[in-house]
Image (tube, rainbow, N blue to C red; front, top):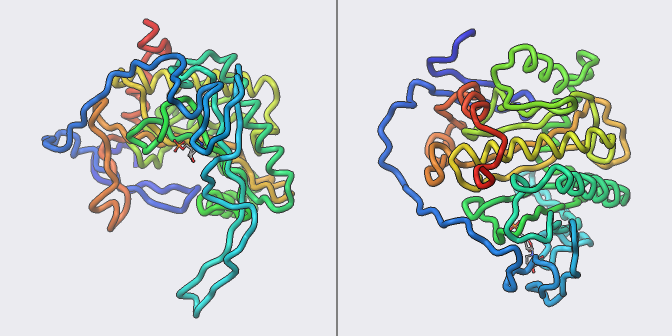
Length: 345
Ligand code: H2U
């Protein structure tokens, strides 16, 4: 298939899933939801924010007067350190297993009004270092199989607080998506002796249709199988398995590529672009996992303006995910954007 003008399906080899693409539908009229945008004017320090330096948190603890990043145990963790439920398996139909884990919150900056898109590469580098330290520290525990770093950004994504922050959940099991990615990468590596994402990256850097921006160590691209309109992936040029294994240069370059991608996102609809993003490194079960290449995934919901979002409903809930804008068109739109943040112009 060389052109993608008609309806077609694309395969996601990392998750063994399909996405239906309908580029011919882009001209249909829109009479759906229009959301109100709140002006994004926040103070550098908000005395009512649970995450600002020096403030009291919802659980009663007080944040120190931190100056760069700050990590604390989540006051309302989704996972508890000790497994209590036990196992259930009634004929393979009623199946449950207990889980245990640790949940932390990481503030990216003492500044309440910033986002990664508006932080400097030097400031983001400290965030990358803190992520790597957290994955290394939590992953060392024998009871941790996986450390998931993720950021929910924006009220549209259900984020509870605009202060720039992410979460880190260390789990005693490998969660569903990393587990599927492990299977896929392992299968590919065993069959071909090369890593799946490395071979995929080779094709993307040759085709150049879906690349958004790049540097010496990282490529930001809209994956061929993207579901969300402006979904993106950060892939390192070297097969590095996890955040702690990044060299100092790769960490600097990770900060650079994240800042640039996030600035392009914000510039697209001149708004603080909401998204959920996460890092997928190898499981922390002590195995080498030579098949695994670290990558970051970005899932932003916006479709055509600061207020018009994509919903995964209807056929997407009952059939399979579907998109109109192709991955190539989305990458081209993001490539057209500048990398100076619109609020700094
Ligand atoms: P979001 O990243 O989805 O906004 O979640 C923020 C997390 O911060 C949430 O899990 C925690 C919440 O439990 N939190 C605290 O641990 N202490 C607080 O004082 C406020 C929020």
